[in-house]
Image 1 (cartoon, rainbow, N blue to C red):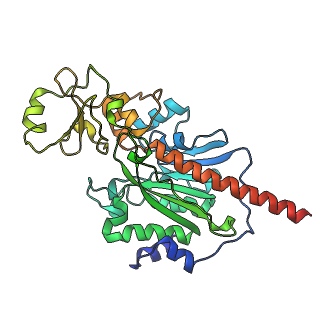
Image 2 (image 1 turned 135 degrees about the vertical axis):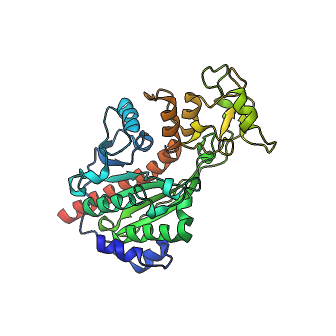
Length: 356
């Protein structure tokens, strides 16, 4: 594996999944994937507060392992799901991770984000966490995976970072599809573009599966439907408003109220710092302007109303900003489950025919 990764890192050619499919067709039906008819086992890596888990939870799913290093995110995850995530993924050997059918991974996006320094794989602690995913895929060979990241991943380092990722996944015999989807098209009142990568292990397939991403559609779900009134405790001081937020008459920051038929800006993990360029604030509260409330934050990401944050408000904002858009994940999950159930039906027919 390490030799493969080193070789991939040294190449400079551009690759796309369709090209890789034409030059590396290695499908096989010799190894039937042993997905049980009753429970589809799921691995939740870099789990945050469980957005992926909510999107994939069904009566036929079972989460067999979760990993999240941040202690505050662990606390929120455990409070809502009852499971405390394992900590640093580097401290467990890939072979010691339970067998699973689906790997989920919203690996850290900061090294590739336009808001950060965009250090990519050069980031000392987070840039190489993708290779933890690759090592687990190599060791456990799940049927499929879903990875999520910021759109900047595609263009980082002139596209070389994304090429490395695609080639690494292809070298592990996964057929990869990817798409940039906007949460605003999935009935959320927030503009939030993310890249989603889905891969299916060719070892268990006779031919390429017919997977397509959901596309969403234009809708009239705007922030006005979720704005609370007379909300106390979220106010921004008048001094900060005058000296910073409204120091220029340039239309920033974004201000909303109960009449705002708009989608809010992408919610970021640094929202608590009250940044005029990236922030969205509400015309309400003791000083006439406040931050988004907890319920409003849950609404723009698709979290259920009964989801709880047993942490400080600062941590709540960080956790929401690092989370996934749940309706998008839910629709991708439906597409993946359809493929799995279809393959299960084919396997059942083949087994019956072999016994006749």
